[in-house]
Every structure is written in structure tokens, then in C-alpha cells.
Image (cartoon, rainbow, N blue to C red; front, side, top):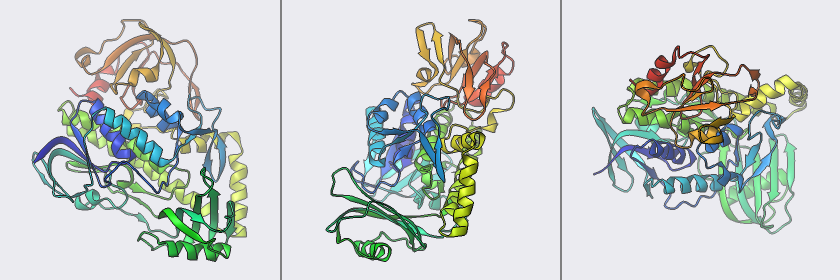
Length: 484
């Protein structure tokens, strides 16, 4: 029997991000991953939104991703929405294939010595009063205090935990593939009664990426080359002599969300907790941000620093965020429906989004920069929102706020009179920084806000308390988020 404090089922981006967060917090965690190697084929997502990039920046690793990706000034909701004027260092979408995103996260987890049991899959578990016995497909027996299902939309962990997965069944599906063709392809988009199809020649000049809309909504098995050839012929009148598939896959517009993100000692994150169409490229980012929210909370509970009630805030904060993504992907799917009448509606939506306020509102939603956690309370506009990456001057010289979060520890940032605040009995858990800030404090969508005298920043970069020059409310916030 191999023991770990926490076992994560699934070593995709969500599982890797969560494992790294837990390790930074000093928790013994291991990943059980179905694939035998780190190689991945069949990428569906290819972008990191601004808030995900900020989170990677908070850990000091965003440069690895920027070095390999391509930045774009727009996010998409039916039409491109410019975010280049947003108050963030990452006012863009980073185009980067999923396999590279996962590889870079894997390198980070490996550098942190996270054990990964490959060629295995969590198939069942038995929960007891003091932990869980976890069984894998290869006969491994693991003992853990907590189990987190990051094992995708068909999550075995979710099903074994008995967590309902309500929502909207698929109304259509898409075939996606990377293949070779004996006939010249037709790069670009093609629209017909079944939807919008696409074809592109990849960097090697020989492989062709294909996306075909309007496929069987009920299809679940992996597609075959013959199915792809038939679908190509139905759309283009030829199958282009398609052959040598690098990979074939399908996705649908099903929209489902776990009724609960936790059942006892079992939690869910990423696609195991929510599925939706890929409109706007939000799924990967949702999972990474789930992990950043859950990691420090689960670590504190596992170490006995905080009561299990802290985990209630995980669902309270992340469930509404995912619910909003389900809604906006459904809306985007409707706007993509073929037909002249729908095109008229699409034109009106496009005109509305060309106006500055709607553009900022929808772009803030798509980029994740407008997220607001109501659990942090009311008052100053910063409460429950991401802390801006301000340029500050601390005892060690010029720095910026995100640099203070590299170790995934909470920070009490005093921008008022030096020495006027103290972390008290939380001094071993919360880093107190006296600093100066000269400038304007801005939030995306909202704009300029009053400059705070002090802020308590959670490890995930969200603000849990704002001071006005006095410590009022600070002790309560420290107790709520970082234990007694």
C-alpha cells in the first residue's frame, strides 16, 4: 500500500497545476495518469487567457509559456474583442498548443518532484473515517486522505463518488483531426446548412487540420478515418484522398456541471466538474483556475491549519464561474447556427459588442479578468477580485506584486505607514510586506479605483481584505482564510 496525503486522478493541465500548487504548500501529493508517457496527441485547446497567464506569472513561470506561444490582442465572443487596453501585463490571448501547455506544466511539476504513476487510472475507491483506499487499473493500491478527480468529462471519480452531472445534452458535434491528403486541401472556412467547417495546412506543410461541424450529436466512440472521409465528402464533395491520421477526435456542445464539487474526501476540478463546447477557448483556463483556487485551501485543510469548512468556499467561488462559462458557450453556439435569420441576430450582437462598454464587459468575462468572489465580502472594489500586479518598492527595492506570490503563500501588503500592521499569530503563515506604491490602481471593466492602504492577498492572487489605514477586520479575515 503506497500512501500519500492527496492523490490526483488525471495528469492533464488541471491535475498538473493542482499538484504543483499542493507541493508548493508543502503537501505530499501524487498523480495517477492513464497515459503511459507525457506525449499527447489530439489537442483541442490552444490558448491561455489573460487571467491564466497572470496565475502562471504569480508562480514565476509565465515566461516559459510566452517564449513558445504567439500573442493575440483579441478574445472572442461571436466577434473578436480587443483587450489590448486592459490594465494587465498580459493584455492578450496566448496561442499555444495544448500539448505544449501540458508539457511545460509537466516540467514544472517534475522540477517540484511530484510523483506521477503513469499507465494507470483510478477506477474505484473506498472512503473511510480517516481516509480513502484508492484502486487503479493496474492493480495499485493507494492510501490517501483526499482524492481529487481531474480525470475529464467522463470522470470515473465523479461517478464513483455518486455526484450528479446535470445539464444540457449535446445538440450537435464536431469532428476534428490532423491528417494527410493526396489532393490539395481547401484552407479556410466553409459554411453550409450544417454549420461552419474549417481546414488549415500546418507548419510542416503536409499535415492538414480539419474541423467538420454538424455531426451526430449522439456519437461517443472515437471516430474512424472512414467516418472522417465520409464527412469530408458530404461537405466538400471529395474526401481529398485523406490518409495517415495523426489523430482523430470529436467534441460536442453538451453543457453539464457537477451538482457538487465535493463529496466527503473527494473533490472535482476541471472537466470532471464541468463540460461545455470549446467556444472561446475557456475550458483549459477554467481547469487551471480551479486548481489555483483549490490548491492552497486543500493544503491548509490537509495540514490541519484550517477546518474542512474552508473547502466550502471552493464550490461557492468556482461553481458560479463555470456556470457562466456554460451559459456563454451555449449563447455562442446559438449565434453560430446557420440561417439568414440567425445571421441578422449575429449582426446586431456584433454591433453591440463594437461599443466600448459591452466590449469591455464581455472581454472581461472571456479573459477571466472580471472574476469576483463574493465570499471575500463587500466594500472596497478590490475585495474578492484579482490583485493588480502593481509596481511597488519594498525593503529589498523595486518589485511587483506578482513576484511576492511566487511561493504560493498569502501576503499582507501594507502600502500605508510602515510598521502600522502586524500579522500577529499568523506571522508564520502570512508574509507581511511594507511597501510604497505611487500610481493609479485600475481594474479591468471597472476602471480606476481608490488606492488601498493595505491588502490581504490569498495565494491564488485574490484579495481577502482591504485596509483603510486601520487594522479593522484584518483578524477576522486572517482567521477565515488562514485558520486559527
